[in-house]
Length: 251
Image (cartoon, rainbow, N blue to C red):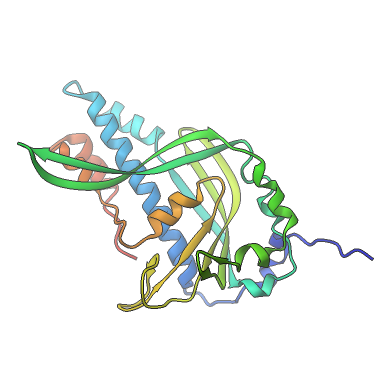
């Protein structure tokens, strides 16, 4: 008798580790990563709007345009646990993840020079909607454990954080489910610094916002700040935006 494949998402609530009112480490990392990505993209949007406005700027119109281009993430319904606890269940929730429009997000390193001298380097991000592909739908045919706990580049991931994402950008929005997997912290290179001497690797499985962009912004070394906007000193649009959107604090 064939066993019926049970959707992964349906059992995460049972397999997830119960945690108290305090936010888990995994959720903190995931939330901070999406916040960094959004801030980086929004700083770039502000820079672009101010640059296009030039000397004939209208603060109200500029702020309205910036708000319309704002990249926003709302994360909810976190389930955290060990990947081994979902062994035998199927990742069919990714079947439609790459279908329709997806976000194409890429990090951008910007340099500013004065009189031929390098003044500052800033990290921002560029985002745009693009058509996705249903090629990843085949992932639904594989057990979750065979996908998520396998060794990738010599790294074996043991824990996961599953969550819902609502993304809004340029008047469009999507709701979907995504995943991040975590390897045990150890000395050496990695993604997230957990102590002074240990770093853990984190891999994102998000086919709408993009795995590589999230993994990139998750790295502690890829710090995001509004220094790109120093190209416009004393600009009223920049000053107002920064008052409403202060720099992110470190996790």
